[in-house]
Image (cartoon, rainbow over all chains, first blue to last red; front, side, top):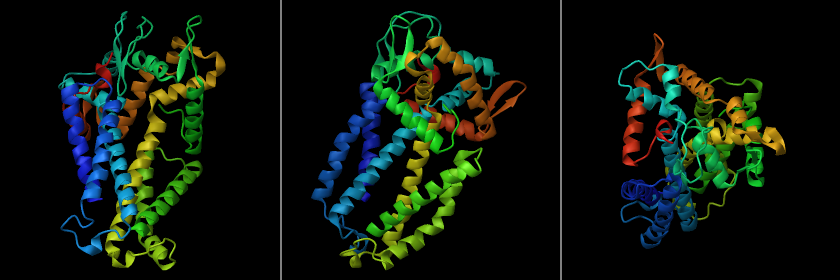
Length: 198
Length: 178
């Protein structure tokens, strides 16, 4: 488990360095890519180090080496999930974006209408928008895509293959994958007695 | 260690199942507080489950005689905590995700789907913002003074941590995206 924590710290450091060097558009991909060599590094480190890591008492080590290795890897994955989730909840989170927008106002008056305006886009045409966590969404922006919530999200969901846009009627509908995900989410929401949420 | 990990999994599944069942009987307004309460109330059960598993030999503990029982207990509580974090995160993915809400909205529309305007009309950005501002105010992150929003200590701390994280990873918030 100590190795797992050590590799996790390495993972966060590598992800930060990679973000500065690569300036990624897709953070989820970056985090996933960085986790692969770190996961491999964990297994290599585990194989080349003794169970006691040269300093642990025997009673503190796990007697089942394979279980210990698997457990450490699960702990690494859970820590990565914690970290990535915390990253997206803060840096990409809607609620936290509101807090940052209020902070950036620097004590000046900021009303609900001002905050709503910050999430509006001017009508424009063009391409090259970015879906947070995933990357560029090179689809045309229509004047209807008037806010920062739907403007990237719908093309992003189309790009992922979860929804599709009928070019004739301009209606958005679910693909097979999207329908499966929607049904699972709907079922989970019902099983947890949640409202519509979002 | 095995006993600790399995005890953590068993207690975690137990309290999560009971908590979700309870939400049908008496839904909590603050779900995070309900989850935290569930976790804290489950803590005293980790130790007896760990002990019972050892006594009943429910887990193959071959070679475990050399292991310190305290380490097993440490792993039980540590893994129990990690499962709690994982559950809370998964809960918020399901509950708060705008993308997933969009998919559910489209599911309700059936095969015909819906145009952008209708989707926006059913779940407008203004109501998303208002809903979140209300939650942030209720949770003590912000306050409304003379029609203007101001950060409270908790909110300012979180906003500053986020600004630092955003700098560290060169990320942009939702209000800065196009």
